[in-house]
Amino acid sequence: MTTFVDYKKAHFNYEIMEKFEAGIELLGYEVKSLKKNQGSLEGSYVIVRGGEAFAVNIFIPPYQENNTPLGYEPRRNRRLLLSKDEIRKLADVEDGRGLTIVPISIYNKGNRVKVSVAVVKGKKKFDKRETIKKRETDRTVRREFRDR
Image (tube, rainbow, N blue to C red):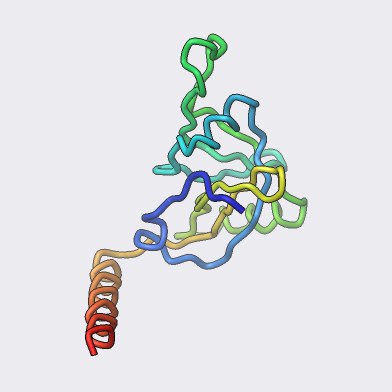
């Protein structure tokens, strides 16, 4: 399993409640671009419309600029491949207050490209400070044990 794109700040900006694994509908040159580790999940999210889930605002640049078809949009909506039960759960979450659905990483599993999607709750500023403080204390403790 190789991770192509990872949303590194997801654990810092959000409190992760539940994770899902979904397939994603991509074009051939988008897969090639992802395999070159190009792309970004910054600012992307998932919406559920008409019984289908879509990833919105995932940036996947063209693989070869000159060979890309005219009208290619790098931030187009991409359909997620989920079961009906999972889509129903995500639709219920979307209706709830304060919760968002965010893609966390894009990776391959076998010869398929998968997206890890999480139901998240945004952290407040004081929660982020607490996360930083905990991370720094863990680092100092590890340094102390390493130096002994």
